[in-house]
Picture 1 (cartoon, rainbow, N blue to C red):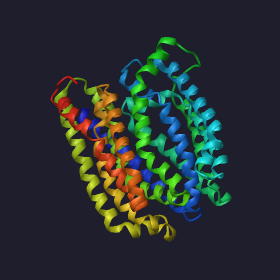
Picture 2: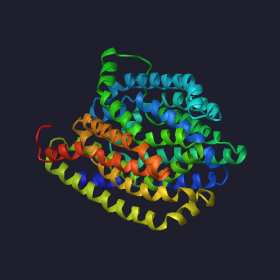
Picture 3: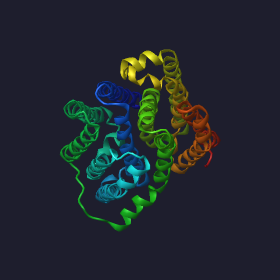
Length: 409
């Protein structure tokens, strides 16, 4: 099977997976939004902010490293697993230590028990067998579809069940912990290659050293996507935070998922293409135009039907999110087009370019968010995300043409 056919097949499977995940997420949120309040979603959002920040600050880039290494995966397996376990333990410890100060920062003590539960999620995730990456590495996207969709169903089912049972935001974190535990078990049942808790110092350091750019890029990406949440939670409170986060998910999740699908598939395909620059150029241009063709109609739908979409998926008490939802529709387009280049940069081991792009995005949103939030409120935060997205683009458009012309970068 040729690369184009493999790419189409992979995009088909991953597209189906993302569509399935979005569908399940929409159903889950639609149900829980009628059980829980925006403030409860805001408290849950605080817990996710802390977990997400610590995960990206300690991101080792293991999956990217293992894909880039070609056939050398097995010799790095145990070292990669030890790195993952230590990372999970570190995240859990830090969450326990900062739970009190974080609750004070957001002026919400309800976040404290939720943060403790979130620490356990991080700890469990650290024990996942790194061989999961073989799905993506070997372009086995059909198997990944079955694996990931099963975990997502488990997460959503427990969240809804526990939500009905407890009427508490903790239901969403407990469901994450259950899904993470099941993933660990399945990762050792499904894959015949199993890591052992042993450290090869040289391989350990190689994994960590190669991952530093992924750590930087991930950290900046997280900050780019969460500075707005942090500022809203601090300045406006948990109720506006809950409204904003759901508007953000509705307006950007589908488009962002499309970008992630293409990156997930094209990254290993670009690696397999090696030095065949003509094929790489053709594949990239097709990917970019396809994402553009998907993003524009979706943004138009959000602009025209924002109110009925909120009524259908969230309910009447969430209508205050409508103005910012419309603004975020434009942000979704710009960010999806920018991230469509990431798979190509990763394939040539230029993670640093992604990091610099995300850094400029952070500068853009940081410089604009406070003036805009004071002038326009919640909608102003949406405007600042657009400023940040546009600011992240220059390094991409400067370097990208050189890669496509097969020049050294």
